Length: 139
Image (cartoon, rainbow, N blue to C red; front, side, top):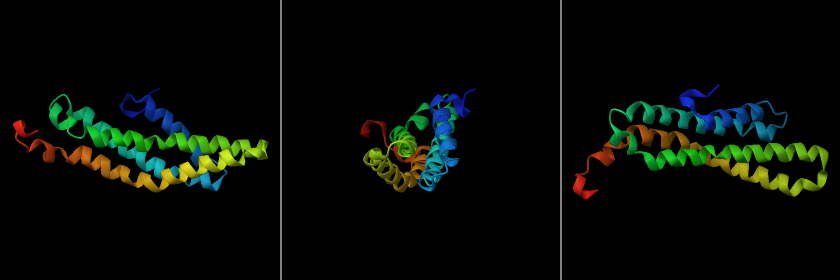
């Protein structure tokens, strides 16, 4: 089964999100909200691009840079996944504390920066006018 919009990426991130939400570790669960926010913003922007491109490819393409940035924010799922793996390793091998700390630190940095995702989605969806208003020879 594919995720909305046919995205395997979305499905993979969603699977990690569900695992993080179900984690007994409070620090891991804290990553769920920003990851959900970024994933929702990406889904909204993807729906816009997919539904607009056939009729108006210029409008759909105008937000290409912030759209790609949304993928970067959703890339925080890798940080959440690394923190999850490191947390499991802690239960087995205490000497891995350094890698656990690094994974959690990266995940927490992601948590604080993922708030930009809805703004990026809004730029993708509503920002085309700023690009399309230029005379073509000026672009």
